[in-house]
Length: 173
Image (cartoon, rainbow, N blue to C red; front, side, top):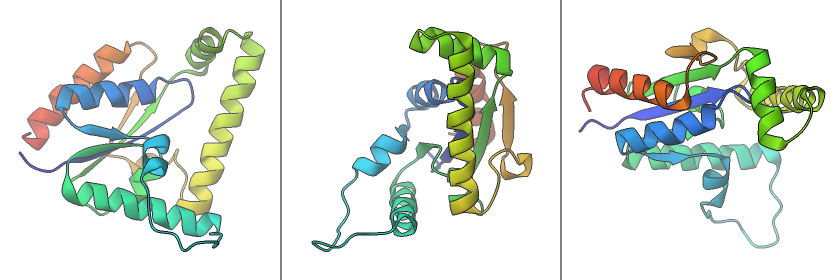
């Protein structure tokens, strides 16, 4: 089996994280999100504070180290930029209509639609600011991706199955 790196960026409320984990199950590939990447221990000199920029570089090195040893899926973390020149990388952006995202967030957190909309805006703005600051690019720029998909009319399972089938066929895994 050929090594494969899949990066998935997504809009808040699109279901992108759930799609990534289901895709990982279908392909038999480990999925790494923010918590998993931050949970990987790295050497840090005692009593030394590191800057946010240094922390970002440590994180991207962890991602590169993981990808060098196994096929994997990265959720967020500017993966599209970290692996932009890697021939084994498939970069995906998942988005959904705003009304769909608001409805999902309101249901998930048990809040009204206005609160859900504000939460979506806050998360998306934070992700965009993070991406622009550290990657020097907008996560909404379609040229950063090999594949973008509006998931508004599909279930998580349908999207994951579609992606898995196409990846298996195209990447011969």
